Image 1 (cartoon, rainbow, N blue to C red):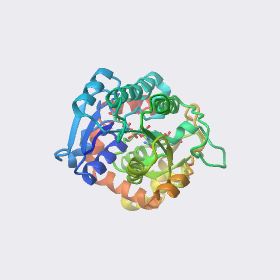
Image 2: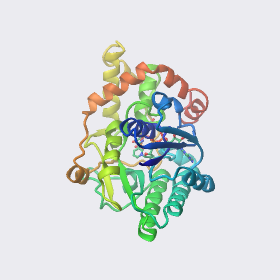
Image 3: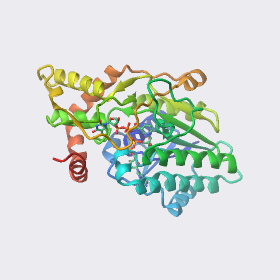
Image 4: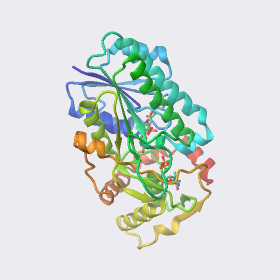
Length: 349
Ligand code: NAD
Ligand code: TYD
């Protein structure tokens, strides 16, 4: 019988991960610990909130006494640690909240796990969900492998790199059973519209400018979120203790090509004239320290554990757009209030 703590389960990736584990493993008890920051939304989990094997707990991972108490009450056998501050632009304006949540929060969970599992690490697992951004920025060629040296360049990636280091340090020093995966950019339903794809979908719907940083030539390697959480499931159950796995879709797009593809598909779906939404593209000031290119080599995951992405990008994008068009209430809900203030501070009206 497993009792798993998922942190950040009300966020984008965390909600897909929680749904997968609750539905696929009815014999596991799943406890979702989330502080419900601006990025956390219980509407993301409506379809499973009544499931008998699911419990939601509102709380902050940086509150170590509270986290230790939660471990004592639930006797967790595993942790899937997803909670984080996740947006690079916010990390540029407020780096300290990234240190607090991503570094201090991770160490607080590690400490609670170490104390609870002391003397009996058998069958336990602390899994850290991390990002490819810890590896820094690539030039035109090459890929990030598990051996690539860490070279984080934004406050966000520096905080995630630091948390990865702490996870490994707890493994080496205290023999805590850990796994880490570093994934490329995700997209899909429930993605908060501060990130490129949902922000552009939202703006295309509302005929608002599509802000492209710099020349739009930066490259990201996009993976459908359900493929990511399937990889996490595979690694959680079959990966080796102490190991790191890179997850990526071999799916590189420049930002400008991606946004044009979004415009093309949305013009069709919305019955607009071809080329209409492209008129909304607006080049804006570049992001400070903007990483040029991320690209993952996921050979280890494929060869050791047999994982492969399931969706072609155009198909995944189409599914994602359809989800946003069919869930206008969700979108209206998350774009009201605080998010509107944040958006105005970054892009003006
Ligand atoms: P998100 O911002 O959508 O969600 C983060 C969740 O964590 C929210 O529900 C929020 O309420 C919760 N949270 C934040 N601070 C907390 C705290 N102090 N205590 C408890 N809960 C807190 O993030 P996401 O995009 O779903 O990313 C999830 C994880 O995956 C992060 O660790 C991120 O670094 C990693 N990751 C994300 C991507 C991506 O493309 N989004 C890619 C690779 C890795
Ligand atoms: P984002 O979705 O924020 O993810 P990350 O920075 O973690 O890769 O951004 C993806 C890319 O899109 C990145 O190169 C920055 C760029 N971008 C824009 O050009 N305009 C925008 O409004 C946003 C949010 C991002």
